[in-house]
Image 1 (cartoon, rainbow, N blue to C red):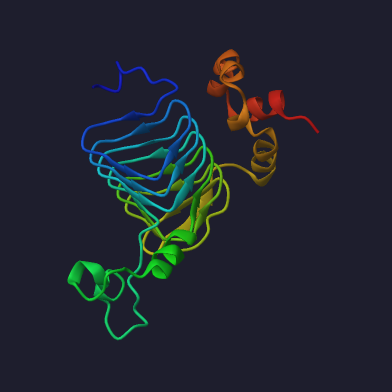
Image 2 (cartoon, helix red, strand yellow; image 1 turned 135 degrees about the horizontal axis):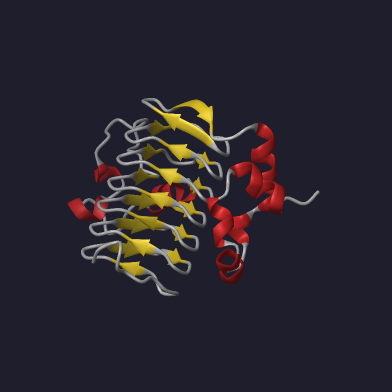
Length: 208
């Protein structure tokens, strides 16, 4: 299906060979082919490209996630004598009738949060327990291990902020406008405003 001729709707669109476990989706959401999603939520209108791997993550609305992104990668227990997962997947190797449930519960508790209207570039990696602020841009190939401010642009390894998309005043007003919480009808009615220069958009929709 080409991006130019597909029609999304209230049910999530899941492309071929995606594996989804214990995850929830808002309206107009899309999961790319060969994705692996686990213990995660997608806000309305958010999507992933191909070959993404997302675990234990809360994704806001209108988030744009490019191909080959990994969010919330799980860690091996490097404080133990061995890194190998026979210490927590004991049943797999015949060492026990049960696995280490406490270990897995701790993994799932380490939530990564992706804000509304964010853009996560191709091949980026975002560590567990990191929060990406609303409107932020994560550059292709970046490795992000610390929280990112709203509307910041972060690139590199390790990820560093190089600038903000807008002035502090504009950012403050956008965060108060919260257009991502508008209803579908309100977005549709104001669609032309999203083509305006940012100052005009803010001046039209910001209220003290």
